[in-house]
Amino acid sequence: MFTISEQWKAFERPARGGKKGWNEDFADGGSIFMRLNDGERCDLTSDLIRAWLSDLPLNRAMASGALRQAWESEPYLGGIRCGSFVSKVAHDTSDDLLWNLDEFADDWGQLLMTATEEGKLEAMEFPLTVYRGGTGTLDEVAQGISWTLDLEIARFYARDWPKRWGIERGPMIVSMQVESEDLAAFLDGRKESELLVPYASLLRDAMTEVTDRIDERLAG
Image (cartoon, rainbow, N blue to C red; front, side):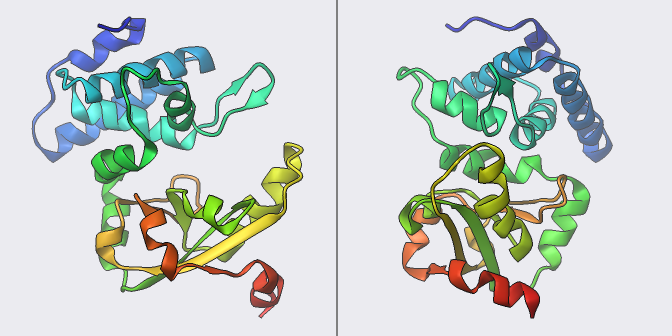
């Protein structure tokens, strides 16, 4: 059994009924998360992940609201940015509870969306051209779950964001086309037109590097 954080009790409360109840619980979970400091947010994210893996009872809507914030927020611990709270917990999880971000996105992705985002995803015409920016090799970038419809966002994560944190590896921008069944969610809370693509590495053969053509395509 794992140590329960002080905030955990709120997530054991009975779920409200109906769509309105879900939305209210979702908002409450997000609000609880945002009131915490970064250390407490890490603890709560870890507890929610462990509860998911252990099939413990929890208010799924509240957990979804908190995990949505955990996905989109960056911890700042010891003077270092650590990706998102979810990725931080994934990297720190002990071997007794094995999981990865692909599994998380596959199981939780749809529940992280708002009604507006669900509607936008349903209205999209497939196949979609998506992009992912990072550093290193194509195979390394291909492992990622977070993709975007916006070429400028991919460029930011390949070039600008790494420079902010002293990352000196070369930029890599990858493009591919996806179908609706490839996606777990559309998230736009950060205005990044983010698409979650679990197990994206399985689509490696469909990916093309566009790093060298990025400036020309944006200018056009």
